[in-house]
Image (cartoon, rainbow, N blue to C red):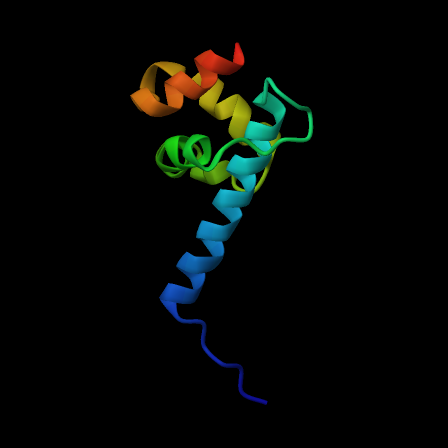
Length: 89
């Protein structure tokens, strides 16, 4: 049986979904309002680029991504740094 080749856009779509899920779960840890909140869409958008840029090797491990972003706090985008500062981390 011949396997259907995976298109690059399919791989990018899968990776994007994993990053969004990981960032959402990471923000759940930081949410000040509720332990079960996933963070706002704005918070997820603020940090997604930094996850790709600084911590792509940690996807989809949420705790590892969180630790990576903390280690790289000085290199975070302004928007993502605000998310971390608001959460007290």
